Length: 232
Image (tube, rainbow, N blue to C red):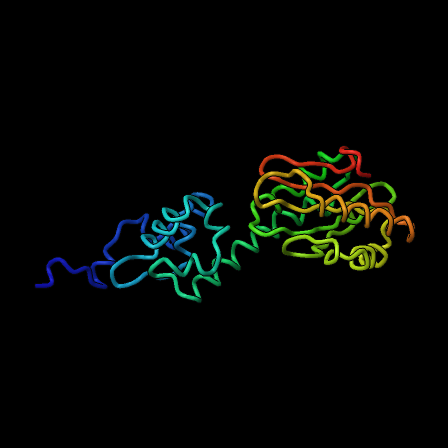
């Protein structure tokens, strides 16, 4: 009667690649596949599948780690076996990864050209599904001394207020500021709102004595510098 039913004993009798914790301890994390590392985050599956099998289904649904990192909470919950706790833990893990990418690069970055801004920030911004408006704060030698996300959501000149941008710039004793944001569509062509925000920030910077050096829009593998476009 139970010949075709997988039980807890059956789940334990799995090959070594289906026991990623043991592999990590034995061989090190660098030798594990994406599926195995994901299975460690998930910790448990169910009576009918292991965490490894659940990780396989997750990656199959979203295509790869990049697709999984972009998934919303609701999209994760659509997959059987992913409850609220697992969905939250996955979001937290991917956010930590995104933040880690930017820490060492930002702290020693020197900006000379718009391409430097794009190279520095594309890994952090290009994959995001919402617009993020970010400011880089520079010293007199154009070294980045700080970074701040000012706003998340659809950009509007009335929302991205110069007060928030230059309050942070003054607090950090910045000589200049570079603003940038991503276009989730992948097309970095500036909108009328982007141009209006740039003009407003340039004028505000002139009043407080902190130059707006550029406003860079990050797309999918492309970028646009509003300075190079003649808006600054």
